[in-house]
Length: 346
Image 1 (tube, helix red, strand yellow):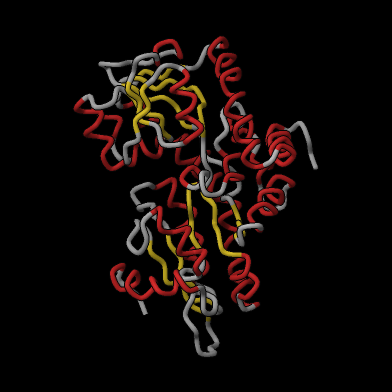
Image 2 (cartoon, rainbow, N blue to C red; image 1 turned 45 degrees about the vertical axis):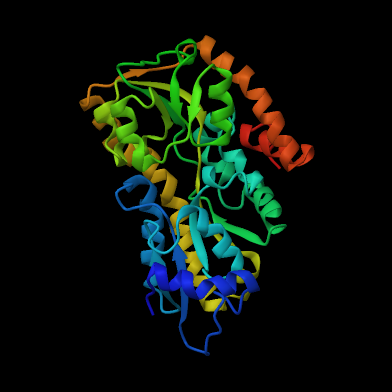
């Protein structure tokens, strides 16, 4: 039965506090078909971000083994509610941008580390399903009873600095003194180090924040820019690769192991499509053929970083990398970075 968000939260509260019953937290009678409840807080208007998840759900729901009860756009759970609900067993799977959960799941920070993300983005195979880095991430997730079935084949194009005409940014030097909207922990450290006042603003409020001068600039992926029509308020994009993120497809380890074999097979088949097409289509088709031409049409100045700024970014990134390695453990952190950078292959 399809649920409303209100009914779901009312019935799931006790379950989230008392543990799971069965695969989703509810005892189910034996049936020939399994129902799996999945969520994403991303709306369809974020075309590049929702392309992979929508395709996965469509394929999974078309199987004979599974009926999917799926809620996008935060209709059932808001972004910060998804992970607790998954851990409690009240949902079966979730799609989540890694940048939102790196404080709770530090190993996923590998997808947002400055000085690393550009290499990872340019080499999709390094975090593809079955790669040594993918397996290392899952080894760490397993300690929290989490399993990442796929990270859509790669991370998405890095986040750059997008600025207004009243506070244009063409270089790291021009960041000093600016008010900049930042989401990720990693980018926040960098921007504050460059002299910016980092401000955390939801994407839904960013258009007005830019229009009113609440912030001079934003660190964002191009999906946020186009999805919220922010190009109407912007003047310059400085393509300094500060951070990035992937969109992971997650279950719990216990939930995955308890999933009926036919449902698991259907899940894997749909996930294979997600792995092959999720990031690749967004990065190589939607961004390149649709989104960047829209940025050009809007008249934004597109500025490539200088070699001096790239070197300054690399130097500034070291403190962020060291802090992250302390969180995940020195050995794990060093190995993950080496795998992401192509300095180690196993």
